[in-house]
Image (tube, rainbow, N blue to C red; front, side, top):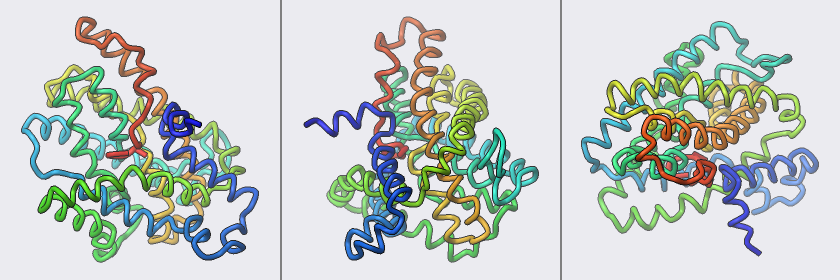
Length: 338
């Protein structure tokens, strides 16, 4: 059986398929973890420790050295994405209840959902798309995008928007595994290679544990809202990113559009942040469902619209390949969820 190949055909499948399986477990067998106990319970409920190991290993894959072109391109995209997410989070904090909208077309929308969906780019998706439609330097820009990964930037944005207050030691605790991995990976290339092998392998376990925090009944009530959130992410972040790519990054807008996605790793952020700030707990489950749907929607649409845009602005250089082929996503975070 070619299970892995089948999963790879699904946008973000390495994260999303286990997540769906975990959600099925949560919905129909909510007491499975307590009943089975031991290691099985650890797999079902171990979101935080699994993410901690993954975050450490991901830090080890980030190289300190990078060309000026890569830094300019990726720095521009990362900063603009963060600024847009911050503005949208401030607006959400002002007009939406902290626990999220309870009904209607925007059911589940909250500051934590909007922040998580917008502030992290699917680095693997970006790299795959830009290898098709961009330059080598543009494809390499996903390296700096990895710094967005994890809850730290979402915490910074939520704090700057006045939605939440985090003690300094909480920030340190959130980023310390990444920094230790980053340091070790740059001190020893063998360690970078060793720990780097774990990044992809841990993604299904992260997805399954995250899924066990989602009741499918919540997705049924927020499905349309999740699709809407995904479309909003593409439009609201895509336009500023395209302009920044053209005016600052020296590109033609293709790289900016390719970065207008939701990372798979962002699915974890609402639950992680809610564990630190109890005020977010009422919104965390629906926010997780919304972000998961947004990840899937953007993983499907971003390669298509990027391919169409690339062919329009530079037909001679555009790759003669169906843009749908780019939807085989490297893990949607860098390197992933993303």
